Length: 196
Image 1: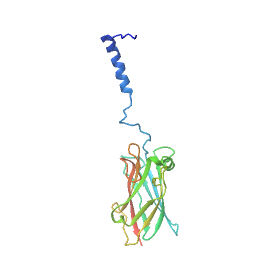
Image 2: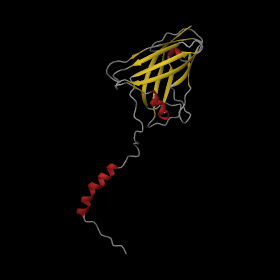
Image 3: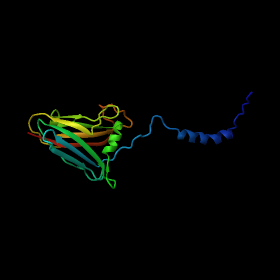
Image 4: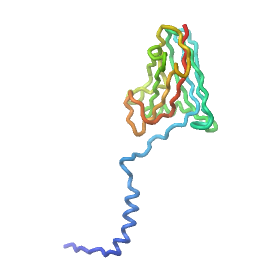
């Protein structure tokens, strides 16, 4: 038969700090650990190659000191009405020496990333962007894509007539191939003009 030894009040006072330390070390299930560090991207290169002619247009976004500080600079793209283009995007962290090309890292972590390309202003309905690469779950990634430019009048590229490029980062949100996450590694507007 087991005997029960009552704890004295002094023993309980001694154990209380130990119990509080143990509870403090327990992980909070409502706050999952970050699996994937958010990328610092200071340079983005968007390249479009025209089908048939093989001519290439490139726009570069530069923010050498990262968020805050100096204002970023951004180039523009000019595409032809009625044409199709093969598109690629490359991203870099130039705060490190030597600069780090993050494109392959994003490809390796495809399940945690997705690019979104949204035409703004007069480009809506004129540019159709189709992502052609996939992650391990067959969901879109967006390092490679096609752009179809419908026929119609010229459009002047500007902050209003731009292609919004977002790289969503999925740690807390679940990637479903349709919805952006609450975390964005980049969110930029590339002015795009259309000529005939």
